[in-house]
Length: 232
Image (cartoon, rainbow, N blue to C red; front, side, top):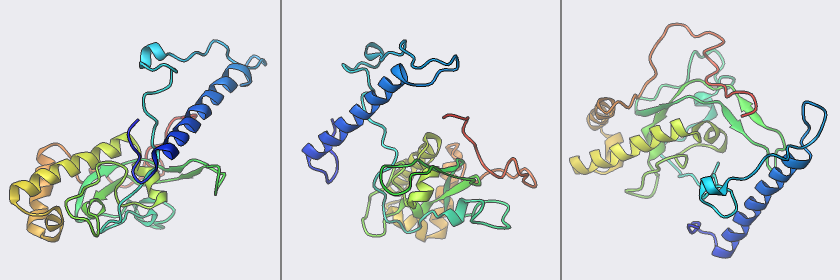
């Protein structure tokens, strides 16, 4: 188990054990109580495959961190930048001059045991990732590489999925290499229009798009962004 930042080892171990018990409880419900289409209950044939996953209990080797700590960034990605309802009359997401990547996923937040008990599911435009969201306001030479960039809890729901995380990680890795090559700080790249344009050209030469292609007027089908399959 990797140490958790800012959390005592005992507390982290307790939280992970609770996660494990919750997963096993859900499996037990699926095996014994889940309603079936034939009118019965339970799927007793469901089994954990520790032999496949390489674990003694059959669960994954590491828990999935859906949401975690985020940096306080020079620019924070807001719902008003990417949410359809939050941009009345707009034909797309906010266009950022310092864009270093793209994403396309709905804003979705799962219910929790505290706070809201309802799933949040918000239409979202295909959007850009601004370089400012990768730059901490205080700390130098630290770059987020996935869902820990500058977002709100709401917009983190659109950035937590793997394709968007890959865009963030690719931009951060390329930025670190670019800054080292030019002998400047990552923050200086955003502050200098010439350096920013050079960096964006580097990203595009690597096959990392910084803007969505234009296909003409959006329709009600295309403006909502990707919608995951039912039940996912």
